[in-house]
Image (cartoon, rainbow, N blue to C red; front, side, top):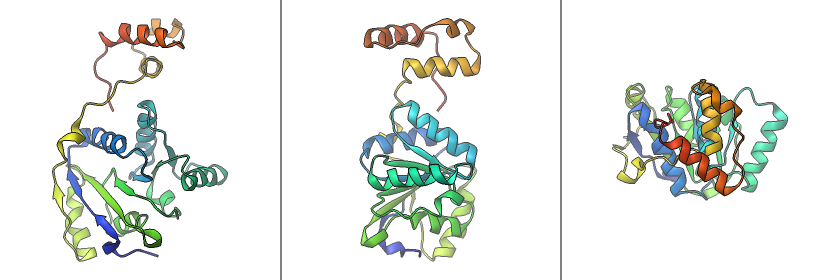
Amino acid sequence: FLHPLSLHDALPIYIARSEEKFTLLYNHLAKHSNARTIIFCNRKFTTERVCENLRRRGIPCDMLSGDVNQVKRLKILEAFRAGSIRTVVATDVAGRGIHVDDIAFVVNYDFPYEPEDYVHRIGRTGRAGNTGTAISFADENESFAIPDIEAYINEPLKCSMPEEWMYAELPPLQAREKRQRRRERGEREADLAQPVAETPAEVAEASAQEEAPVAQEEA
């Protein structure tokens, strides 16, 4: 059952470069931390990367993709309904089975290629008489799909630049996560021998040691 577009408060489309999208997403979630939100990505790899990077910056979330088995999927959906998890990152295939009321935001991290997928995605909000907002990020590789979607829904889509607050600098990764990222990239073999800081004092000391030589982490 697809809900009428009139049930949505807004359908804003933010024009952004691909490298800006994670920053825009993070700041939106940080501002609306208590809102039930579904984030859609076009590929499984992107879904995994977005979910992991949100967790590394302190935003609890879970992921639904074709690789998630049915038992785990049901547990994630139950947690989403109960509110113990407020954010889910999903692919289109996995997202079509999400039937949860009171979803405040659908975020199209990747702008969908097909008009039908756009309608299916935004249909996750506006359920049971509630209203919701569907936000889309359209980058240089995806904006071409906008005219086809407008024709399909017979309604113009409002495109604009993101608001200034959405460009706020990302928070630093925690010291533990920075060391893990270094291990994965093989940038510092010596880091492998360092113990993981556990106390606040140890975390602060480790973070201070790492901040100087480390370039800004890729989102």
